[in-house]
Length: 146
Image (tube, rainbow, N blue to C red; front, side, top):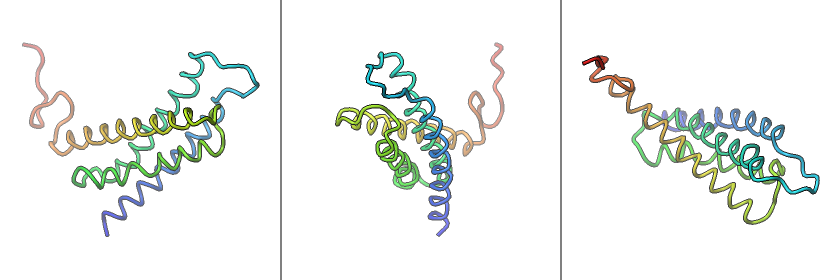
Protein backbone atom coordinates (compact mmCIF):
# COMPACT_ATOMS: atom_id res chain seq x y z
CA UNK A 1 0.00 0.00 0.00
CA UNK A 2 2.80 2.40 0.86
CA UNK A 3 4.56 1.62 -2.41
CA UNK A 4 1.46 2.40 -4.47
CA UNK A 5 1.01 5.65 -2.58
CA UNK A 6 4.58 6.61 -3.47
CA UNK A 7 4.05 5.68 -7.12
CA UNK A 8 0.77 7.61 -7.36
CA UNK A 9 2.30 10.64 -5.63
CA UNK A 10 5.20 10.52 -8.07
CA UNK A 11 2.83 10.33 -11.01
CA UNK A 12 0.82 13.31 -9.76
CA UNK A 13 3.93 15.44 -9.22
CA UNK A 14 5.29 14.37 -12.61
CA UNK A 15 1.99 15.33 -14.30
CA UNK A 16 2.22 18.82 -12.83
CA UNK A 17 5.83 19.17 -14.00
CA UNK A 18 4.92 17.77 -17.43
CA UNK A 19 2.04 20.24 -17.82
CA UNK A 20 4.32 23.16 -16.98
CA UNK A 21 7.05 21.85 -19.29
CA UNK A 22 4.62 21.29 -22.18
CA UNK A 23 3.29 24.83 -21.76
CA UNK A 24 6.85 26.17 -21.85
CA UNK A 25 7.63 24.07 -24.91
CA UNK A 26 4.55 25.44 -26.64
CA UNK A 27 6.04 28.91 -26.22
CA UNK A 28 9.49 27.82 -27.40
CA UNK A 29 8.34 25.79 -30.38
CA UNK A 30 8.85 27.45 -33.74
CA UNK A 31 5.71 28.38 -35.61
CA UNK A 32 4.88 26.27 -38.66
CA UNK A 33 4.78 28.91 -41.38
CA UNK A 34 5.81 26.69 -44.26
CA UNK A 35 9.50 27.58 -44.19
CA UNK A 36 11.96 24.82 -43.29
CA UNK A 37 13.59 25.22 -39.90
CA UNK A 38 17.38 25.23 -39.81
CA UNK A 39 19.03 22.40 -37.89
CA UNK A 40 20.38 24.48 -35.00
CA UNK A 41 17.03 26.06 -34.28
CA UNK A 42 15.37 22.66 -34.44
CA UNK A 43 17.84 21.16 -31.97
CA UNK A 44 17.75 24.10 -29.55
CA UNK A 45 14.04 24.86 -29.71
CA UNK A 46 12.52 21.41 -30.28
CA UNK A 47 14.71 18.44 -29.37
CA UNK A 48 16.74 19.74 -26.42
CA UNK A 49 13.71 21.12 -24.50
CA UNK A 50 11.85 17.85 -25.06
CA UNK A 51 14.78 15.79 -23.80
CA UNK A 52 15.18 18.02 -20.73
CA UNK A 53 11.44 17.83 -20.09
CA UNK A 54 11.58 14.04 -20.18
CA UNK A 55 14.58 13.94 -17.82
CA UNK A 56 12.89 16.28 -15.35
CA UNK A 57 9.55 14.46 -15.42
CA UNK A 58 11.19 11.05 -14.95
CA UNK A 59 13.38 12.44 -12.15
CA UNK A 60 10.37 13.85 -10.30
CA UNK A 61 8.37 10.64 -10.72
CA UNK A 62 11.28 8.39 -9.80
CA UNK A 63 12.22 10.49 -6.78
CA UNK A 64 9.14 9.28 -4.92
CA UNK A 65 10.15 5.63 -5.28
CA UNK A 66 13.88 6.14 -4.75
CA UNK A 67 13.87 4.07 -1.53
CA UNK A 68 12.34 1.06 -3.26
CA UNK A 69 14.53 -1.68 -4.64
CA UNK A 70 15.94 -0.94 -8.03
CA UNK A 71 14.21 -2.14 -11.11
CA UNK A 72 10.50 -2.48 -11.67
CA UNK A 73 9.27 0.05 -9.10
CA UNK A 74 11.51 2.78 -10.40
CA UNK A 75 10.58 1.97 -13.97
CA UNK A 76 6.89 1.87 -13.06
CA UNK A 77 7.28 5.20 -11.31
CA UNK A 78 9.28 6.98 -13.97
CA UNK A 79 8.12 5.68 -17.33
CA UNK A 80 4.35 6.22 -17.73
CA UNK A 81 4.11 10.00 -17.35
CA UNK A 82 6.87 10.88 -19.87
CA UNK A 83 5.25 8.50 -22.34
CA UNK A 84 1.86 10.10 -21.69
CA UNK A 85 3.45 13.54 -22.14
CA UNK A 86 4.93 12.35 -25.44
CA UNK A 87 1.52 11.43 -26.77
CA UNK A 88 0.05 14.72 -25.51
CA UNK A 89 2.91 16.50 -27.27
CA UNK A 90 2.16 14.63 -30.48
CA UNK A 91 -1.61 15.10 -30.20
CA UNK A 92 -1.41 18.84 -29.51
CA UNK A 93 1.17 19.34 -32.26
CA UNK A 94 3.48 21.32 -29.98
CA UNK A 95 6.49 20.40 -32.04
CA UNK A 96 6.49 20.81 -35.79
CA UNK A 97 6.34 17.63 -37.82
CA UNK A 98 3.82 14.84 -37.57
CA UNK A 99 5.66 12.31 -39.71
CA UNK A 100 6.40 8.81 -38.49
CA UNK A 101 10.08 9.71 -38.23
CA UNK A 102 9.34 12.79 -36.08
CA UNK A 103 7.03 10.81 -33.79
CA UNK A 104 9.60 8.01 -33.46
CA UNK A 105 12.29 10.55 -32.65
CA UNK A 106 10.13 12.06 -29.88
CA UNK A 107 9.56 8.61 -28.39
CA UNK A 108 13.28 7.83 -28.50
CA UNK A 109 14.08 11.17 -26.87
CA UNK A 110 11.50 10.49 -24.17
CA UNK A 111 12.96 7.04 -23.45
CA UNK A 112 16.47 8.51 -23.28
CA UNK A 113 15.17 11.19 -20.92
CA UNK A 114 13.56 8.55 -18.71
CA UNK A 115 16.81 6.60 -18.60
CA UNK A 116 18.79 9.72 -17.65
CA UNK A 117 16.23 10.86 -15.09
CA UNK A 118 16.07 7.47 -13.38
CA UNK A 119 19.87 7.24 -13.44
CA UNK A 120 20.06 10.59 -11.63
CA UNK A 121 17.52 9.42 -9.04
CA UNK A 122 19.52 6.23 -8.56
CA UNK A 123 22.73 8.20 -8.18
CA UNK A 124 21.25 10.56 -5.61
CA UNK A 125 19.59 7.76 -3.66
CA UNK A 126 22.86 5.78 -3.47
CA UNK A 127 24.66 8.82 -2.04
CA UNK A 128 21.95 9.57 0.49
CA UNK A 129 21.59 5.92 1.54
CA UNK A 130 25.30 5.64 2.17
CA UNK A 131 25.23 8.80 4.29
CA UNK A 132 27.57 10.64 2.04
CA UNK A 133 27.50 13.10 -0.75
CA UNK A 134 29.72 13.23 -3.80
CA UNK A 135 33.31 13.63 -2.63
CA UNK A 136 32.87 12.17 0.83
CA UNK A 137 33.96 8.91 2.30
CA UNK A 138 31.84 7.17 4.95
CA UNK A 139 30.13 10.39 5.97
CA UNK A 140 33.42 12.26 6.50
CA UNK A 141 34.55 14.74 3.90
CA UNK A 142 37.91 13.89 2.48
CA UNK A 143 40.61 16.50 2.51
CA UNK A 144 41.82 16.82 -1.08
CA UNK A 145 44.93 18.74 -0.07
CA UNK A 146 47.74 16.23 0.22
